[in-house]
Amino acid sequence: MDLTFDDEIEEFRREVLTFIRENLPKSIADKVAAERMDLPKEDQLRWHKALYDQGWACHSWPPQYGGQDWSDANSYVFEREIALANAPRALVYGVGMLGPTIIEYGTEEQKERFLPSIANGEAMWCQGFSEPNAGSDLASLQCKAVLDGDDYIINGTKTWTSEGHIADCMFGLFRTDSSGKKQQGITVLLFDLKTPGITITPIITFEGIHEVNQVFFDDVRVPAINRLGEHDSGWGVAKFMLGLERFGTAEVSRSLASLARLKSMAGDIQENGEPLINDPQFTAKIAEIEIELRALEITEQRFLFQPGGADAMGAEASMLKIRGTEIQQRIYELMVEALGLDAHLAIAEDDFNQAINSIPSGKPEGTGHVTRAYFNFRKTSIYAGSNEIQKTIIAKAVMGL
Ligand SMILES: Cc1cc2nc3c(=O)[nH]c(=O)nc-3n(C[C@H](O)[C@H](O)[C@H](O)COP(=O)(O)OP(=O)(O)OC[C@H]3O[C@@H](n4cnc5c(N)ncnc54)[C@H](O)[C@@H]3O)c2cc1C
Image 1: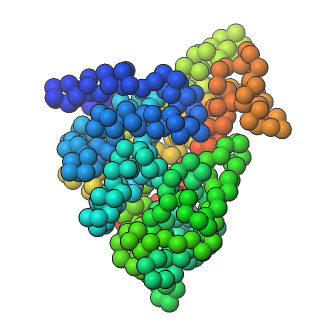
Image 2: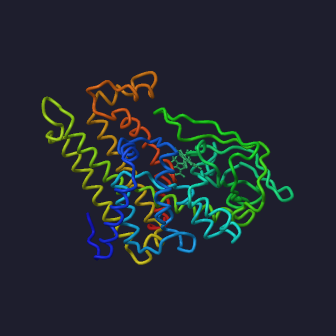
Image 3: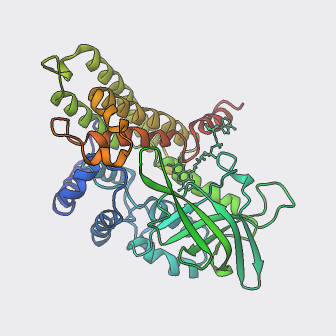
């Protein structure tokens, strides 16, 4: 549902649309629209630089650190138009998570040292939280950091590290004491991924994408001045970051863009000599998911425009995450259903990547990417705290269970 805003906000919307028209390269928007999940780093940084030059790359940060003093309405309109235009997602780990956390917990020296390169995109960050035996139960992490003079020495491993292979730096959680409760004795460290002793190995996911990695640490020395927050007290910092991560995962506006693509595909695909969109059964499925999405959109608006705005969200962010990711997955399911055999042929080949690059003519353009995206989006109900864990958060916070 399009909210009606006052003239000032509508004027701002026009400014954003003009900016997008003049600065978002068609080649990049086409890749996002074609469901490319492995958007190259140079494309991400090119768009980020355009936003940075405009002063919008870190708009949610306080103005003294390069942010904009926008109202919730400005932020909403901005994010919505960016998503609908198929612009790349923001640099989530640096701009979305680490920047606000440094502003909240960092020393003045850390703010001066780290924030400028996050803002201008010179340093791309990744998140080193999960380990082979610590995902949902994150506090049981074991990757060790031992204080030795002015340095911590890290040994162990992190896994599922998104974009670790293209990032410059990592923020991570490390075990600095095992004597108390598992939430105690965790410390947050920030470091360059080129530090000696770090090995990054790819994890190629089922659909053939290199998006995640396992990172190994062998006597890696990190200066203690790179510690964010207090020694042994990183769990509170981690929870702050996880809240920021969860909030961004509903992606209502991007689902609206995907839904529009689904409808357009169903208009192009012929079944029994008729466009698929004329099939009442298939159209009913589209209508069902559109109703769900519109309901979620209104729910998100209600949460965002409540007193306190996004900052007042607790379990609400969990609700949005669950429903938003279910809807994302359903839209891709319907895309695969629309493509029918073509979608299945794209995965039936031995080499899935090759299958994607050699879709024979006659099949709808981007078939492979859609199939890839369908598999890739299975992740959304797992990462940023699995949907089962979100249900536990809601049960505790809302229902008092
Ligand atoms: C594509 C992708 C990218 C990722 N990127 C990153 C990243 O950049 N950095 C990072 O640190 N991590 C990342 N992760 C890791 C992600 O946060 C974890 O996968 C997630 O927290 C789940 O942990 P797990 O994989 O160990 O599964 P588990 O915790 O072992 O869970 C397995 C299943 O059991 C369920 N389950 C577990 N505990 C409970 C419970 N108490 N109650 C009910 N159900 C439960 C879960 O919901 C899940 O269905 C990524 C994961 C994926 C898939």
